[in-house]
Length: 86
Length: 110
Image (tube, rainbow over all chains, first blue to last red; front, side, top):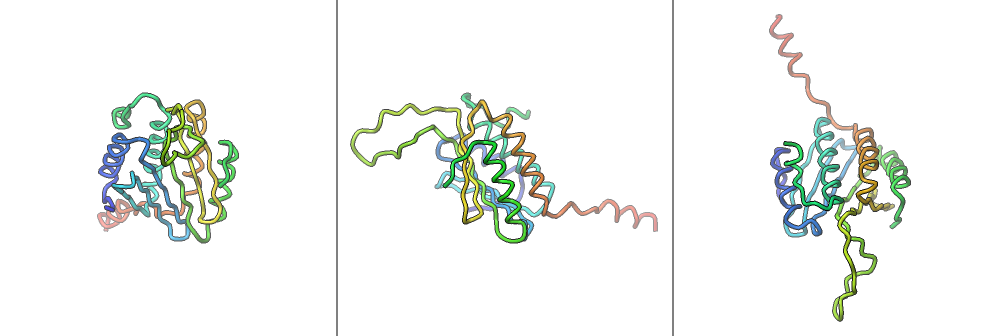
């Protein structure tokens, strides 16, 4: 269950995992206001990728990535998220 | 588990965040959904079922109460905007970036 140190690595690995099997992958977000931290997990029940942060600047990245994954899930074409931003 | 409409889900999610401000966590789960309403049978014939490709399931809980909603491609744009604003507004308890540049400036002037 590796905790990634950099956001870029986590985002790339998470997106790759999702594209291998969209139906199996789930994304979990855990927010604790009292402790002031946010944890994001992407897993297909075999591989588990996690990213933890207590920085406000990461909230925007996490929330944006969450939205991109949501749009990927509802879109019919298998389009990569990174391709969209490039 | 309560299945709600997108708007009710957003309202309930706001309440969930407000309730958990002093203690506890908010868990949000996002998963692709193919529209099935019946569980997959263990054996025997598989149900004749046409999977749809344009839906996702969003769940939220504080450990006690759970709410969920289904978002489809038609609603995703509107929902995602409201949802992003909601997350950004409530996840504000994290540390702000250290203003290292300011301290460097003051040191340089000394």
